[in-house]
Length: 474
Image 1 (cartoon, rainbow, N blue to C red):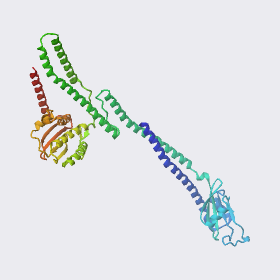
Image 2 (image 1 turned 45 degrees about the horizontal axis):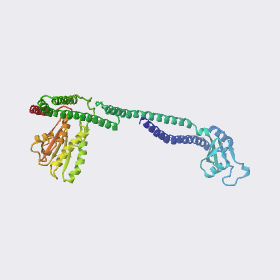
Image 3 (image 1 turned 120 degrees about the vertical axis):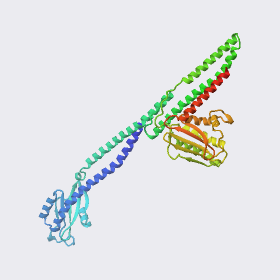
């Protein structure tokens, strides 16, 4: 990518330099030519007043010598009476002062047209300037302009243009190289982070820096890494919980094996049960003690809750229109950053909105409100249904009891998402008259006081259930 940017910059800058330098060089050459002929016009204009006064050869030679070099200027005066066509031989012929370089035809053409003209001659050009005499004839002042004067300074100007163009090309290549480095380094860090994550180093994170696209890629990578860590942690917890559930049937097997008496079969059975208990204990300890290398999410990790709300409501609005449901969204018109992965928030919203469509009649209105506070973001999903008579029982279903034909996975997804930030989930009555589910998402990572008591109660209930199972087994 770095060399591609350098090549593109080199090609574009070279085309721009050529596009501007070539016309500018031609303009400079034309300016030098105009300057040379302007000087020639001034020299010719210096002779014009003398010609309007006298045509005496000696006086005109002195004027020509004072106006310029007689080698570079010539004056062509027609014979008296040439204008009327009644030239008398006694009056003399035409007068030529200085060296003539232009042809007689060019001089005659300028005299006939009555305006200045240029003619190409050997080694340069000549300016032919007509001047009216007091006698009515037209004299022609010829000023020689050598080629060296026409191109004076053009070479230097072109050299300066070439140097400036080369400097621009070198500068653009250097800037493109620095920009390439700025883009390549974040991309390399992203690749290195992906390799580290693939090798099992779950603490690999990528700094959020560089261009906007790479910044978004880094945020997505960090979010993905966090999700991988969470998924692995959930799998370990699930393995530990499932293994722990085997303790009850193992206890029964051990008690039954103890009542088998003596004999090789009984001893083998008791040995197999003890081996199975040891394996289960090993699995539980391994799952509980496995600690992945984790790191705090860097700045920029998480998602824009407003964007996710708008996206998911755009998805569910089509089904709402089919069922004749009125819906609204509030508070999602400006960005709201939360420390939650985009997929987690989207799954939570889908779970709650799916419940609205499954458990309320067609035509029932619903709404999603987003409130952004200093230390927390609140997402409210409300409907105009019949409501929930026992919110605690509903949350119990969210814990996975499976009563009333519900698996409880939807509210469990929402709960896990909220508790991962130190927040919580509450069920109450909405202003629409039905159910309102409030998701409290903590922004600073601190656990809300209400959640500490709630989690303690949950732990106590789990411990109580475990003790009850153990007592029943014994």
